[in-house]
Amino acid sequence: MWVEETARRTRPERVVWCDGSDAENESLVEEMLQDGTLTRLHPRMAPGCTLHRSHPSDVARTEHLTFIASREKVDAGPTNNWMAPAEARERVGPLFEGAMKGRTMYVVPYVMGPLGSPFSKVGVEVTDSPYVVANMRIMTRMGRAAAEQLAGSDDFVPGLHSLGDLSPDRRFIVHFPEERTIWSVGSGYGGNALLGKKCFALRIASVMARDQVWMAEHMLILELTLPDGDVHYMGAAFPSACGKTNLAMLVSPLEHLGYRVRTVGDDIAWLRPGPDGRLWAVNPEAGFFGVVPGTGPDTNPNAMATISHDTIFTNVAVTPDGVPWWEGKDKNPPADLIDWQGKPWDRAGKAAHPNSRFTVSARQCPSMSPRWEDPQGVPLSAIIFGGRRARVVPLVFESRDFEHGVFVGATMGSETTAAATGQVGVVRRDPMAMLPFCGYNMADYFGHWLHMGKVLSRPPAIFHVNWFRTGPDGRFLWPGFGENLRVLLWMVDRVKGRAGAVETPVGLIPAPGALNLDGLALSPADLETLLHVDRDEWAAEVPEIRAFFDRFGDRLPAELTKALDAFTQQVTAATV
Ligand code: OXD
Ligand code: MN
Image 1: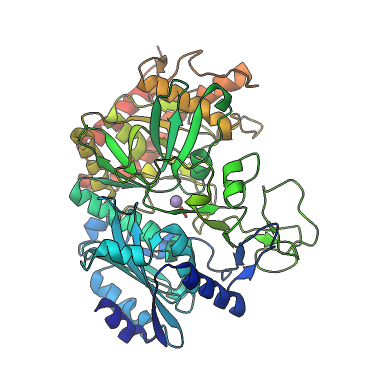
Image 2: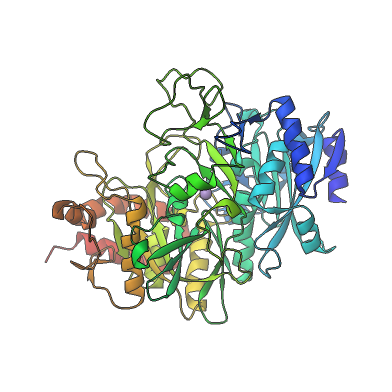
């Protein structure tokens, strides 16, 4: 009924119900190759790969055009754009009228979460973009499997998507949290258009999770195995384009000693309290929609292997014979490169767009954990918050307890990246990396976190990391990538109660000697700077954090006000 009603409104030339089969995908891809939506890449160097060039004004999520249409403004909260549902119907509704004239309307049923898992959920996206269909097929369990999971019930999240005319002036991504529906018009890009990802699995799911006592988080999930066979799972929340994919696919430099890292997810985690009082994590996605630039054989060999075939590239550069290229792939750009807009590259600007992306099935990733599709999920030993901070924030610290960890997550800041339109490199508060993705009042979201801490009898330990601290010369002090394992090992040792730590005003940092740095060429001076907590620098952050908290007024949980007061006292108290 919903599809019929949508078709009456958008008036497509035809309606196609997608079954997710290979044959369907092949004919869809063939059509897109014919009409230029996709270009086939080099048959030997990039077998099965295609390139899509988006409209140059449609290259990233547009947060200022993303709305929460809750009935009450206060339920969207001060950090979301709010639109009254009636206004959405008046302003955005008409943009769908006849929007699919002359186009095909695809009906895309999909499952978020492993098939057969009691925690998985069904969505149905109606879209006029075949590119979106091809992406959804990789990113979700799409087609017949979803219809089967639904088994005739109407328990699904409907999402209506149309490219419209692709104009940012008529672009809106609107979420109705009470009705649990999504409208997106005017963009064909990533998180704006693949509605299972940010719109459903984070914004709408965060509301469901609040009501049903679970959590929908912007987190990777990784598995760490120790030489004695002990296995630990960790969830890490970093803002977009801050290295979640790289951390999730980390290659252990100590693999030969039995320290192994495997991937469960790279962007989203659905977390539930288990009967054992621990927090259990499921990756709702089936693929990776990752940032391409910066991905190379040194930084992320697992991603390089994953995207070596059967990948949709969006907005990368190519050689004339169709070999994809991007900044960070290798040192020497090939001759005669064609940039992301299809023009000869002038070598002045970037060849690949900084937010160019790969879409690829997780099944192709050599580092997937055997448990990545476990219907029950995996139990978390630790949660890691992190951001991109050139100064102030140490390499790693541990929160004193879960409640303090919520304060750490709620106050976290990061320099903005190209994943969203807008200025890049300015520090903004991005609590739990959920600023653009929380579907309700963020103060209530903090309250929900605090509540979850009480529900869990064995909550994960909470840490904060910053791989991006620089020295006075602008050089990154920490080698990062595979070497981040050393920080993870300290965390596991903390969880097991066998590593030393030192109190600072922000939390606990590794005691001297507690971080295993064997074989790393890290100078004592750099290590000292990496772990340094400077009271004055932190005191300088306080007014801005307080102003951020003040935006929530009375809605902010008292625990956080108290934690900020205590923190302020600690960083401003006279040094002993
Ligand atoms: C993403 C993002 O695409 O966070 O994952 O922007
Ligand atoms: Mn993301």
